[in-house]
Length: 308
Image 1: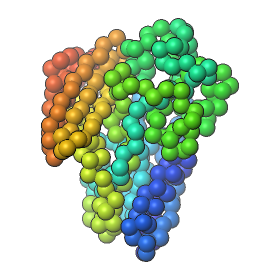
Image 2 (image 1 turned 45 degrees about the vertical axis):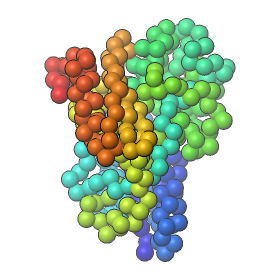
Image 3 (image 1 turned 135 degrees about the horizontal axis):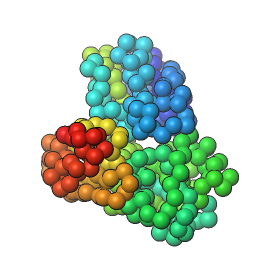
């Protein structure tokens, strides 16, 4: 049986699709695979900050529509790009074991985040990373940076930036781990919801669902469910800097969640723990506590008086 995978055409997207195919092939040697590259709106709008052009759902919309139509059997996405609300026909069928979730700093002269001199230019397009940088090192200058890993590294080496911040998972997967200057601590740089995880999205009634479920990693999916429930309860958008870090040990899930004002001046955080089997309930509870501690006021300012 040949399975058609819907994917973006970036190096990371293709790596992730090949990785999922390899996991499936190992379990089911009889399967064959074909990658179908689908260009998304996010790929076409390369320079604008994501928060200004509609958010990360722009990197999955056209691919998920192809899954819903039956043009491809399933899609492979970076989990952090997947909206909290999928098309009604679709579901996250599997999440393989998650990679490291931390952000990583790459600097031209080898300085860590605390050693960068005041006024140093740091590149990122992430609203969350911008706010966390301004909160932790307000004297640094932040400059927008988009593009694939090669493009970002080239701009760094050309001197356009003194340092850049990217997800460590993507750097590791593409063989750039040696470029990393510093793995940033989750206490100050709390990762994006779903960072480091891969989402396999399929139709709920898909004929290949049993294959996909066989490569799911239960603890990784529980962590993702908690983080996505948190995001959903806070409005599900990407206009507010939000980070979440989760761990599962012995059936217990712990979460650190943080909401920041876009200027980095305020940071509201909460730590919760509970049964991994009740991951979504835990994520929702964390959101409610954040709102009570001051996140509601931040959300109301960002959304013009509207908050969960």
